[in-house]
Length: 79
Image 1 (tube, rainbow, N blue to C red):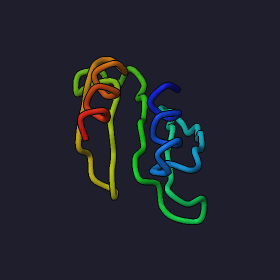
Image 2: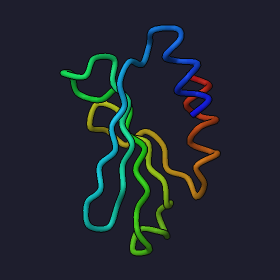
Image 3: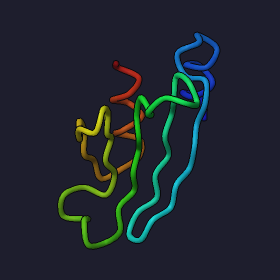
Image 4: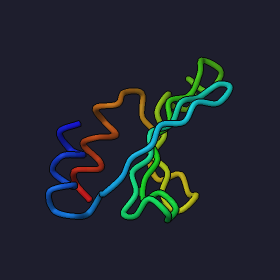
């Protein structure tokens, strides 16, 4: 939430959403609620664990996989 607060204060992120589907849960951040998400952080179920439990997606492309949410957040901070 700290990263979201920082980006919101700068005006980069203005909306977020949460989605749950079979085998995953996803948190998305948007510049505008009507646009596609800028980034989606998805947590996958055990079947995907070998590839990394967490996935960062941007513009429908997988840009980072990690075994912890902390790794994904550090990567997002570096962007």
